[in-house]
Length: 556
Image 1 (spheres, one colour):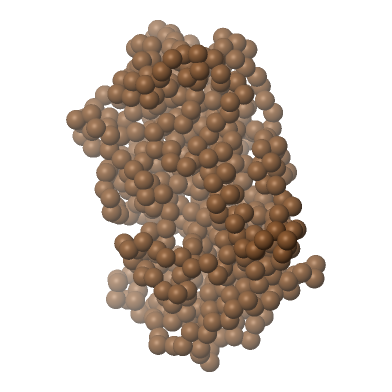
Image 2 (cartoon, helix red, strand yellow):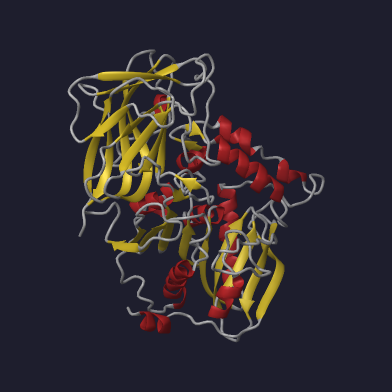
């Protein structure tokens, strides 16, 4: 569809007065009340509503950075749609404070089944308002996306379409325990700096129930997957409504897996997926991003033929390396890309680790080495002297003889052993140019970052064979199989999806270590229980073939 024809199909902005209704009380099924802000156009026609529910306080003004395409206004709110853009186009924007947060009283239970019931009741109550067409959509980033998965599990009758934008879906695997390793950096920051301070925004004495949920302790004590996590996670076979899942290549330690798993798991035929790049919020508020959002909701909430369901269902921003702005998008028929050439690059150990950031310990080769080799590295600095800024081992490909696209999920199949009963395997993929300098991308927090990462605790290497795929291992995380000191075991490390065109002369480097590597930002992991004075080993060649499974995309 041409741009001119598309423009005619889309809702166009009209000059209308903005009606702002603050602190609208919404009754819950158990007799409780939670509060919402409603923004809607002053018009005779009924309008559909786009809702979100969050623990981040609906009244908190967000002042965006200067380079955001959507400009500041008094109604901007973190990770939420802008009423001054949506309401003139014939939509209401509804923001709900989750129970126990912002202005909603009660016990705070973030990311819970109970919260999802409140969201369900809010959707159905709002759909019955005199100004509403009865059709509700949901949209938002991060928590405002993750809460949509849990709501969609329940299939409220008035919920006609959802758009989870960068939204984790599996509370255990996506957020709290990457590969079974506690994500202490993000969880601590999120709870203390984002969640706790919004518990009514008032002193404990005002509403003591809000503070009776020690989330950090609960997360740490539920260190294996269980119903505690599953009740707060997406259940793909239960979600029936149309879904547009929007991911970000740089959200490889929180949200991206939820968006790609949605594509793999959803049974509905009315689904679309896009994956962009850059910060956590720039794409959402970009003109391109808002046009996608508007086309989606115009189709499902207004019945406008915007052509969005006529396009190939997968839209990917293909990174070519080191650009600070946006890359070009490309449409695909499915995910992973059907023409993917799944390629093994084998680890070949050449020497013991030095700990120096610029050194590498081996190569990534297209053929498996015949001779078995082994290298050993310290798992902590204690008792081992300085580590010179790097722990573990690095392997690098030969220079690319032509531009080579890697787009999709990856797997590190690696043989490991330890002097202790466990081993954390943390994997980082990096892009190095012919001059030896690293080519970095703009990360989700705006920081320079690497291509992607993967994690696994060796004791939790057990696979769920029914859910595992050749290109995406699915670990059960329901028991621990402790290592025997010095005895090698084979592990499949899930590496979150990426997209990069390695230019001619560039090399792909994989870092394998016991702690977080380069480009980690706030998404740190650490379990000190086994690391002190322990040593881990990696094997390559012979009967212990270790390799990186890479999704090579041939040109069309």
